[in-house]
Length: 267
Image (cartoon, rainbow, N blue to C red; front, side, top):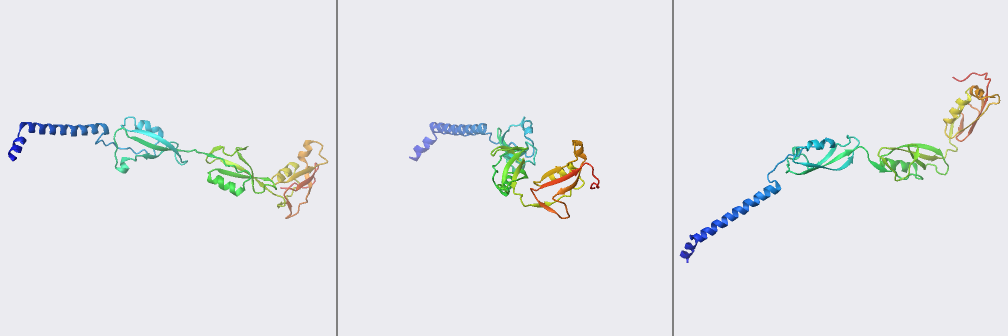
């Protein structure tokens, strides 16, 4: 039995088949490795450049002669960076990770933008404090202006943008300034009574206009023309001025003026 097995192993037929199997094995193994190498760029090591801080406009030039490509995924709001600055990249630079890629790899980046649109909330009838907090949370700037109102005291009456009413859900850039018109019941609030003696009618009217919610009435019997009204000066007022005198807002300040003024005008 052993003699027959030995004769078979040493036969030309067996040796021929063994050599054939070996050649097929080598062809399959090396062919497969060559296929993988050609299809997967086996063994390639291409360095990933560091793109952080560069501008989006530079990418075409940077990748013009490269075996890599790029893709801008989206924008991230960052007002501290120049528009289009690259903030993130994937994969990260080889100099930071010691990781290399193969030909055709797409480097994905995210860039900065300096403006972002945000919906304007509906703040009408909301309390002043609530409205302020909402605007701060949405990164809007705001300014408060007051309007006499007993019914809406402390509540927002209107919301304005560039002097015009702005509807809720309108989108504005972050940082836009919204003016809140807030109601204020000013009845009973006291303010110092100004001394209008010796002022012209125009000067007295301007001073009263600078006070909150005050009315002004001027009487000048000797003023026959508009020119007379311009030079006439106040000789008395009601309520009458005295040191430390105060009046409630909403009061009408009446003045009596004369064209021929014999007193000394205030300095």
